[in-house]
Image (cartoon, rainbow, N blue to C red; front, side, top):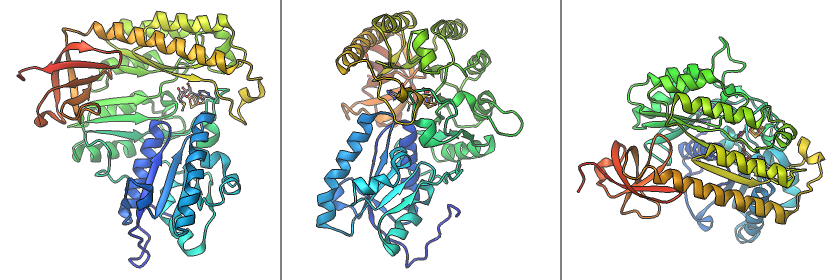
Length: 452
Ligand code: SAM
Ligand code: SF4
């Protein structure tokens, strides 16, 4: 079935949909695409469950905690459904793909379970429920890589995420993603460029390219294209000012790509390249395909070529068998590399992955203590690094009102620092220079040039 509208006017629902997303940027983008599709079919988006005819949860299954949260939200909908049996409840995305039919057994009031590669059929699936009744399961492995985008429907007018590939072939031993998002499929450069061009024509200034393992972009496409080729092509789009990309995998990252990033003026000098651990033994058991030494050398190379490049990372603490000595090596890596920021996760066993066969032998108390230690260490490093920016001028793409103080403006530097400042509305959507005079570990505060 194509993405074009397949409804007659009689079929059209004009109903209210409540949509909540859990998890990563990829899920957020899937939500944006799904909402765009539903809006085209006449659905209205509401932000209160009580006002909705359709309630959809777009889910995450990377850690148990994320799943528990969704099941608890779903449980709470039992009373809503009792009050109004006409309401449609749907579970979408990673948890839907992973748990499939069993969701109906555990939560009989759920009407729809729609996997990671089926959400482009959402309007049709909702119609099926209306016409044929509840418990519609859609978790086939459709090879959908292009989903029509309603370019006018996006949360941030000046910034947009663009999927360049779906799935992952890496099979890190702890990770559920390859099982729930399937094998890697890359979109063609022509498709991605067309989407980026349409976004720019609609006012977008910055695109962030999304892929679970973005450095292997192009695998399977004709002509041996690479992420570097894609970045070069996008760099030529008139009106596009900034290009970002996530997430980089150290084993697939190349020095050639660093040279390309250096050469292309629109590509932001920022890497999100998760190290996961500083211990070679743990990295091997995680099946990451690199050592801590390799990671350090790579970052040194990148910083030699691009001194102002910023680097962010993810770490998992409490992986099976992680000793105090292993953990110290992670602390050491963090101290040596001095990341701009890091996401720290407690290991959570995922049924079906290789690591789930290993005993989850680091007790929760130790996981929590290690998590806290890394968070505190990173907080200190971020603050020290940000302090170095006091008295310097940074270039900010202004996104709009600050979340913490809507009277002030907020935006990001090319290195991905959040900057908050007093300014005028006409600055929104523009790149402006801001002089930094105060910082926290998370935010820079400053004053735009020529603004009194
Ligand atoms: N593809 C990206 C990569 O390889 O870096 C990230 C994918 S994953 C959605 C985001 C982060 O979740 C990972 O970098 C990892 O640190 C963490 N993660 C994945 N599986 C986990 C698990 N079973 N327990 C705890 N953290 C996990
Ligand atoms: Fe998961 Fe590893 Fe793939 Fe990232 S690269 S999505 S951590 S399997």
